[in-house]
Length: 237
Ligand code: GLP
Image 1: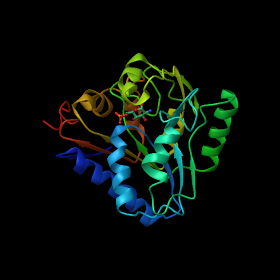
Image 2: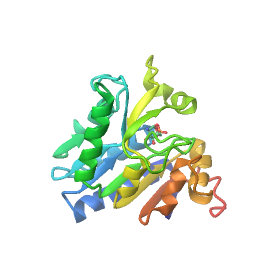
Image 3: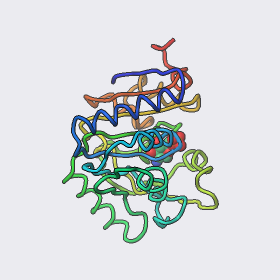
């Protein structure tokens, strides 16, 4: 894994936006795997401000809450439209977000097939403070593809700020097997509350207790963090 430590959150977001922009320049028709969460908001904002041309690309989001309508403000569908799609000068050709409403099994199968047909060139990832990626929680099966995951209490507590009165207990998520198929992965984490998860991902053993640790086995991962998120790394001291 390639590690880039920036002084501030803003500089880390700029570095991440630059890697996405470089990917578009090298391959305008790239397939992007996209993530939600507050960490990504400044990255999407920079891509919007810089009028990056996504018009030949297709995007695939990691996950969505179960039982949340795409039009609900708490949904990842809404997040993506609000922070990215509706604001871009040159939006992607297609934007896919897994469906959180309707037949769960059919939705899982449909998304899995979509990902198998369209290999992801660059997968953008955030990380939960319990080291989850997508919604693959501690204890997850590394061999699983798209599936329905029961959300941990710590994840629900961490995401409470964005959930209002909603208390979803499950999510549909890309599995670790889907994430590991991406040709390249960019993981961004900022803030001290992510420092433990970053240390576990980077320096801990590969274990499903810290799902992000599996990324040590991927051949092309770039990790961008700020000083605060780097504060528990041995090698950064
Ligand atoms: C959610 C998403 C993850 C994201 C994580 C961190 O649980 N499913 O993909 O990485 O939150 O979010 P934040 O950036 O808000 O800390």
